[in-house]
Length: 399
Image (cartoon, rainbow, N blue to C red; front, top):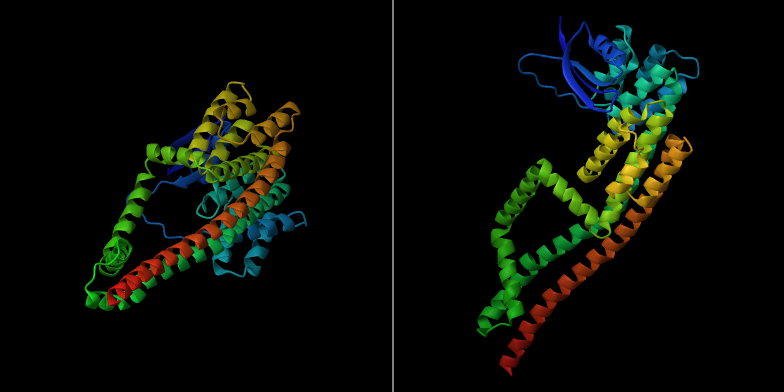
């Protein structure tokens, strides 16, 4: 009998990993559900070397697929026919292949969530967990609609942040390019004139000439060194203690710290609210929510709060004591707990945090753009000032 490795969220909210012998992945999922766990992944164990090169769907493709499926199911289409229609009308070959694979998996038996687990490169644990909740409660169509709203909200937020970054990045590239051009192309034109004069140049001009030579002669070495430093930092951030220290530092920085707090609060409340309103219990929902947080300090705070919640302390109080998320987050969650409306209140908090995140990003980008422009203007002015000082010193010698 084949073996299947699995990942699930246990009844207490703890992650469960292991290997189980079963006929297929659907049997593993059913066994885990009988134990009160929420399966996240079940895959066949392949002995020996294997290499998977499949590329998953983009966030936009997953959102479009989910929205179409949520529209077709309430219209009277059964799941298999709905998937067939989506595959036939798919505009991208990659989406068509994935949907046809899902449909074929359904024909073999088992729920949609089991088919999604076979395509985990396209569908996140959050996505699979919500589908499982919808299947268990008999509200798959409504759950897919809520899931489509969640994916579109996340995509719109990411698009807004990316759009806000375009102008500062363009200005920064232009600034660096202009300075390099002045040092490597314009400055060398004046060096023969300075050499013929034979006079001692001002210190500013000497420093400028030295910088130009460094960029021209050692530019490639400097670029390689910077690349090595970048790769070294990326490797170091894979270490748990280094990443935790870096993420804590990010939370303390002016401007950036508030932005990161709002981002993590938006991820927490949007995901938690969506899970709770779709019938997932609080502890398993917290176990799934931890997978969407990007800051390790926030993740550690959520784990601590989850442990205290499991012991009956509630969620808002432990989160507030960790002092990672904004006070607005914990206050709204406390209101939700007191009114037995934690899921809807978390979604309201998410809407507020996402709006604040857009405003903060717009404000931050509005500051970065002029700051880079001022830096570029100051650098160019310093270069021309150094050249003018040298020219004036040559005129004094001529007189």
